[in-house]
Each structure stands twice: as structure tokens, then as C-alpha cells.
Image (cartoon, rainbow, N blue to C red; front, side):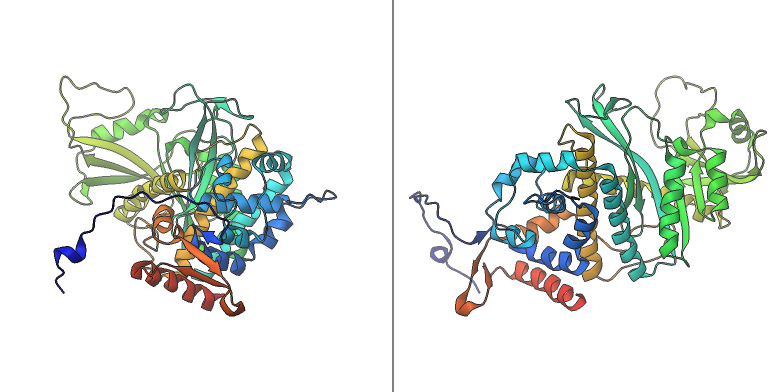
Length: 458
């Protein structure tokens, strides 16, 4: 129906008088869907078992502080002091089961008193919740990706060190190693490390622990992994084979000069697609005991190179192609192996989303244990945002060569703007607790969709 100009336009000049009143108003009406999810997962009680206070019984238990941090990050806040901006929100208080939120100083003290064994229990809980979702979805194979990510600070937080940091050179940092699940885009676990260690520091034991924990509950699942050249070692490859994990790993040219010779002497390359071509060889360095399948790939280089070609002592260089070698124990076609290995770039998207949406890159405290708890809460907040979408939307695809996520996930920031950050009023007409929101059709449709499926699944 066509509307007239008078029906559309209006002139507003007067600025309204501001009046602050203590009313049951909430800025986060959509947080209701996470209240149902937390109840389904029994999250509060499980956190209590992890972060118990022993003989000490403060008003705010450590498990409540950890739960508040998870909610804090889901709401989109990054600094601890920003708790002050929603401490009177009735829906947040109902989600927490409290009449009052703790002060910032109380949160800081509680975090600093958390013990290492409690953090280990928290990591175990995070792994368990991810495994529960994987068991529900019954994936025939799972892809675990491993990589480190830098957390920088301008201060002198405990346990930080100056290391390789291409974005903030010279800054002190942590360089934690993360394990992510490609099919769900979730964090499985993390290994805390200072910023001055190599990628492979502690990686072997951490990787085997991740596969071991998952295999206990997912007995009929095939596990696979893909690694960059920083993790490459014959010891790790042998461990993967012994534990029946299919793997691919980039091979550093500088470790084996023979690889450059093999590439330069190769005359015939088999075509994968318009960009990639390859040849392969079962080969082992002289110091190794076992042969592995080495796939040599080259990719057409579209970059224009001006000036003379700078040759490399170990790595093959020319004007037309970039070269890479992948070692694997997979027996699939070379095309499938190369596509699988190249799919590991999806982990960078997980890191990017987590740093933007749930402050994975933030170091909020000076104490090491407090920062480790904050990182754990960031991971859990990210995982919960994925879990709620896995429960309410069907998967689009399962097995594809690059192992993308089985769902087309919305970023938590998108869910926040569309659903969570909606004004509402809590009232009790006729004694029945009611949340009243504006009659926006898009918000109503999305919110009711989440509520309907989550309540049926609970």
C-alpha cells in the first residue's frame, strides 16, 4: 500500500527530559535462549564441581565468577570493569541466580585465588561438553587442527615473555597452543605457554592427550589431523601412525635439501585443477626408519615479480609457481589429500571470530591463573554460541575434502545484534512472570525459533 508524505514524515524538535528509575528493564532480552541452554547443559552445577572452594565459603563462589565471565563475554564485553554497565540487568541476574553481581575487585580476587588443579578440571569440562555434542551428531570422522595464537599485552602479566609477534613487535605475550574441531568450529582444548616458545613446544604430548580424551568416548570415530611445518618431526609422525591418526603435514624445505633437487628435476607434473599440480613419492630421509608418502605440489603464482629472481639455497623458486611438500599417511587420491591439507586455513577463521567476538586475545589480569581462566571462559563462550546453533539448525553437509564446518555458523556478534541485545521489561501480570519486547517481526521469528527448539530438546 502506498503511503502519503504526511504519513511518513514528522518533525521532532523537543529533547525529552531524562529520568532514571529503578524498573525491571533489561537490555538483553535474547539472553533467555542461553538461560535455557545453560539449564540443558547443567552448566552452573558442573562449574561448581570444577571450581569448588574447599573449606572457604564466600558469598560469591568461584564457579559463579567463572559463569559470570562466560556471560560477560557472550554479551560482548571485553574488560572486567565493564560489569558495572549491566549489574542491575534483571535477566542477567536471573541467569546467574543472584540478586546482586560481584564487584570488580571481588572478581579479580576470586580469579587470582583459583588453583591450577581447578583450571585442569575446567579444561576437562570444556572438552566433555564438546564431546557430548560430537556424540550427539555422530560424525564418522573428526578433524583436529592444532596451531598457536598470540595474546599480547602492554603490561607485565605473570608468565608472559617477549617472543615472535609480527603484529606487536617487542610486546610481552602468551603463545597458547589450541586444538580445534573442524566439523563444529569449536575449541577442544588449549595448552598455556609463554610467548617465547616455538610452535612445537609441548605439542606432541598435548596432541596425543587430545586424541586420547576424544577416543575414550568416540570409539568408532576415525581421527585425522593437519599440521603446518612448525610441527613437522619424524617423532610426531610416528606417534600419529601408532595411534591410528591420519595426518598431513607441511614439510620445511630447509630440513631436507634433497626435496629441492627432486622438484627441480621433475619434468612431468600431474594436474589437480587449474591452479594446482603434483607428483608424489614414497620416500624417507636417511635418518628416518620408516618411509612416508610425500606429495610435491606447485601452484600457479599470479603475483608479478619485478627485477631479477632471488634464488633460495633450499627452496625452489621460479617466476611461475609456488612449491610445497606435504607428508601424509592417508591413502586417498593426491587431489583429496591436497584439498584436505589446504582446508586447515579454516582454523584461522575460528581464531579470528573468537578474538573479535569473545575477547580471546585479551589479557585482563596480572596473575597467570586469572588469565588462563579468562582464556578458558572465552573458549567456552565461543563453543556455547556454536552449540546453540548446532541444536537449532540442521547440518548442511558432512564429508567434504576440505572438511569445512557442517553448519553455516553465524558469528556470535551477529546473534548478539539480532537477538540478544533487545530491550524488554519483566512484569508479573496475574502473578505470571512475563518478558515484554517490541513487536519486531524479524526478532520475534528468530527468538521464537530458538526458544521452541531448545525447550523441546531440553
